[in-house]
Image (cartoon, rainbow, N blue to C red; front, side, top):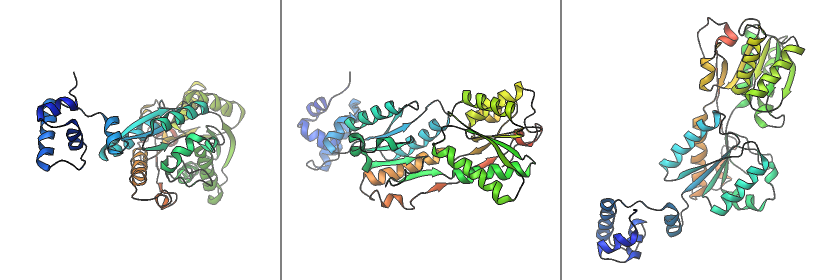
Length: 344
């Protein structure tokens, strides 16, 4: 049975209020009493109640991270970094998965508002929340993690340079001799889908090459959509390369290519994005853009805690206004040939 503050007070021969002040680092008790109470708490195996401590100290110990799809390996990696940074600062991380559903996202926002979390990390598009009473409660202590800030918002963000990542793919495909490139991605209005496409288009146009984008297909960020989109590409176009805007899409594209007798890395290049563990273990290892995902989570939490603890205001936390981390293209057999070793 859990030890209570009342039992510690009885053992110490002092009031419950004095024990509470001692355990919560508050004034009103002598250093000697504080040490004695802390020693008794350790000896008795006392485990503090985080919510009760928050009520006493006024410090809310929870940070929420809202993600759209916890089954996508990108988000657990980011959550790992966020959890590490939160723990180091004395906070706990609450993870909320919306499953790409706007209604679930709105419900989650209401729940987090009622629970009075200390701050909020967002990895989901939130334009539709404008004017929401729940959003009004939380917006002053929110940071975008892995997504750019919506236009016109004052939200700080920590993100990866998707234009640079897309451009790296474009340069690599052209250098390898591929010129008819198909692009498959999630929703067309998703920032990542737009920016990665802009990057590869920029690389092709600036390079003065004869390469072009022969098809663009937008849908969901899933392996199933990657399969469907790749089939459309290979049945209806003469594409010799597929740039999939995340690795789940690329895995679906690889499956279809092999089923149709194509030779990834030789007569068809396939490139993914995120560099999840699975892409290096495929029948034909996939070239992919590696993102410093864990570092996104860590930096987003540090930026958020600076706001929570009043070290900076939300506008100051935007400096630099759109800090971006740099992605790295990891080249494997799907663009180099099946016998070629991995190289950056």
